[in-house]
Amino acid sequence: MSRRRAGAVLALVLFLGPAMAATGVDANGQIEDRALQARFETITKELRCLVCQNESIADSNAELAGDLRRQVTEMLLAGKSDDAIFHYMTDRYGEFVRFNPPLEGKTVLIWGAPFFMLLLGAFIVFRIARQRSHMPLDDEPSTDTR
Amino acid sequence: MWKFLLPFAAFVALAVLFAFGLNPNRDIHALPSPLIGKPAPAFALSDLLDPAHAVSNKSLEGQVYVLNVWATWCVPCREEHPALLAISQQHVVPIIGLNWKDQRERAREWLQQLGNPYQAVAFDGDGRAAIDWGVYGAPETYLVDGHGRVIYKFISPMTQEVWDREFMPRIEAARRGGA
Image 1 (cartoon, chains in turn yellow, purple):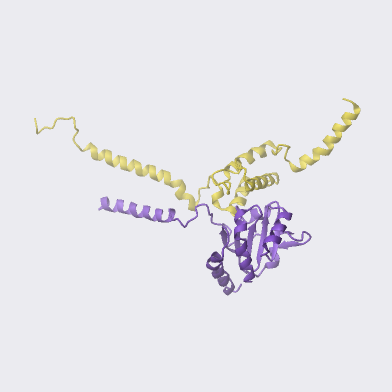
Image 2 (cartoon, each protein chain N blue to C red; image 1 turned 30 degrees about the vertical axis):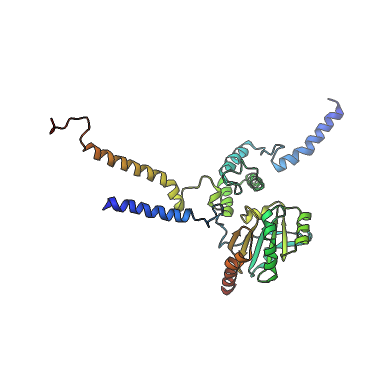
């Protein structure tokens, strides 16, 4: 490498290095801190895109999803906890933005319903089985005819 | 006894569920705003028409006002525009515009061509104020009372009927409530 080229590279590093470190986001839009990027991915998969309601903001191409991803990135870089980020979103868009609503007073029904249905089904099956066990079996010859 | 009551109870429960869930007047995509009853998020953005100026909802404190979210890329916004103009000429409350993720030039042209119903328009180019308000589609119209609380949110194009039915009674109530 010529001295001039080395100088150019050094200048580039000196010039771009701090700029990149300042934003904390690399050229591909990924957060440079791997741990933060991993959290970014889980959080954005957990948040519903409000425009196209069955996509997460991680998958959606909607403008609003992009804005919300930017918001998540900025909050992560600012050192905010996952809880703080989810709170920020639910304060603005309601519980509906979360694909996985937390277990609390008003969501007990959502979380409890499947177990309730399972118990109800088990109860019905049990009742039917017990009733049938009192009935005579079809292939057993009845005592009174022969 | 149980044999009759149980199916009957199940029927009633389903009937209530369907009456609510299959109601054709209910928009399944409309989401209740968690902002209702809460203080209106503060914003201070540059004025669409005069970038040197700031538009802030702080200066509206103590007043009942309407915030209308619009953009030139939003087709239903064009649809509601005549209604907004007519409502603004009734001079009931100030209507503040929030120009959401738009281009200044286009938005200005729009107001020049179609008329300006807004007392002031805040230019939210990067959509940050809109996130604070929980905006997820335009047009959206918010009503803020004299205590600075959001009391109503309407999603869809504004019409005179909606204004008379949903907004006027709330505005009057807010004013009677000492605000």
